[in-house]
Length: 69
Image 1 (cartoon, rainbow, N blue to C red):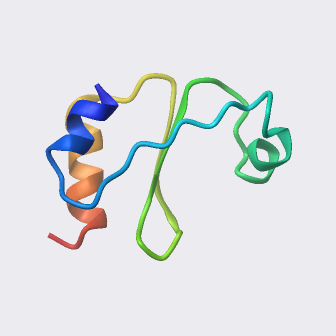
Image 2: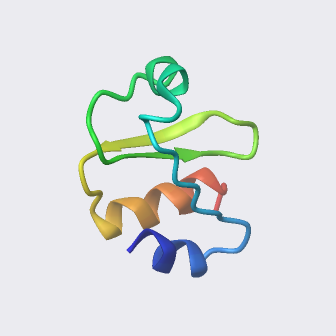
């Protein structure tokens, strides 16, 4: 679902990060549950966070707001 939503928005990339391999990054980003989805803007700011599987409409709205559209 993430790849499908990303494919519908220019400039959006899905990056999967394994918390086992990147435990320090997971702690820094306050990730305590998987899956956790972070929507990050072009400046590197987390603009939306979803613990568990995100709702498609919420994710699409976050991308639209995050893009300033």
